[in-house]
Length: 281
Image (tube, rainbow, N blue to C red; front, side, top):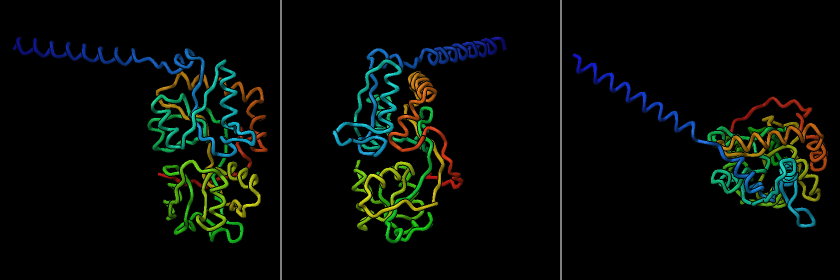
């Protein structure tokens, strides 16, 4: 009996040592994301260069856009240089996950699937979703239910394409295509509809007035906020970026950049009341 008690006691002691050791290993895991950026004195940011007006090339062939300029303002606030790397959406997400980019700036929202590995900064833009259709006949679409059998255009694996497919649309996918290609294809019937962010669509349609497309009026859904996309492990870097964003909002910089690219202040919640919610999952 004494021998048995001795073994039980030893087992409990060893288990306790094991648990303490595990806890110690966890505690020694340090988030060095900010230290790495601070050490190299530069932010590396993934973006597309094709998403007007968030990330695109202007007439002078310079990369600009709302997300791009806000990222530049953050870098300036943190006394860092900034370097942009261009990818499609999947490429941006992969670059952040692999540590090839410190964060991604390309009008990112957060899907349920993406939230397992990534997190967003404080919101830099509030919006909701809408649909672009042909001007002549609305592409035969008057509601989300009318997407059944229609050809929806977009990049693969985005929440917009998942919503379209959920309602029975056929996906026509593009790889980092420009807005004029998307809109022209809807106008000529190669595709029927584009689901995306309302403000992005509003600016795209206004920038290309000769292409006969329109936003489907009053068919709005999924009030949302977008921000910079971070790897979930990089909390110390995200904390620094959020602090910079708070300062930029307070001093009016976000509002100024927003009005430059959207003709309205998207850094605050919109006046439109959008109650319909549509899950992509």
